[in-house]
Length: 214
Image 1 (cartoon, rainbow, N blue to C red):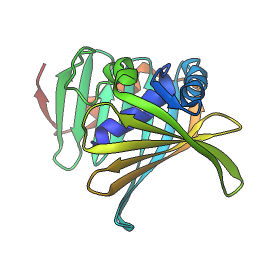
Image 2: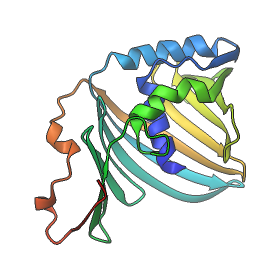
Image 3: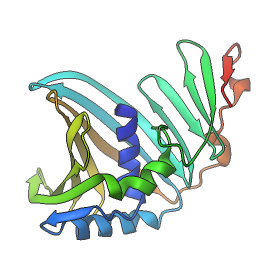
Image 4: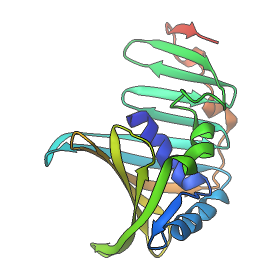
């Protein structure tokens, strides 16, 4: 679920969302946001994840995401992921092990497949505008996305900065009362990203065990 939500962040940013608009102009807002992000050739951002349940904090972690077309790189939950649009590498530093998979843009089961999630985003959710609210000196427009089919979560709440129409926060509400809150920070767009960063370089990790599943 956590891996999927990382790509949900990217999906909201990168694709023209046409989720069913149930009220309040949510669809129009999301279209404006996504159209802005579609213009970017590359994106880089840092995110923090806070996990809570019944108002108790269960953990806090962070990661970075780099995106260039179908290529991406991220570190998440103790793993590092690389995708060059052809292959996917999942590197476990503690185990000194890397697994390699073939990248398939039509693989429904591949949760680390950005192209598939982007393509099918609009078919899975309904959008509803909730309200505008200030948090500190920043005003946010809040939109709820609810899945059209049963999932472990029942709502994704998206916080859009009203002045810039950039996504600042995404909260995922699980049915067991767990909430995953992602804060998007240090966002940069159209920066040079060398294609080499999207490939796992075995020479930099001496002694690593390679499990090639291609």
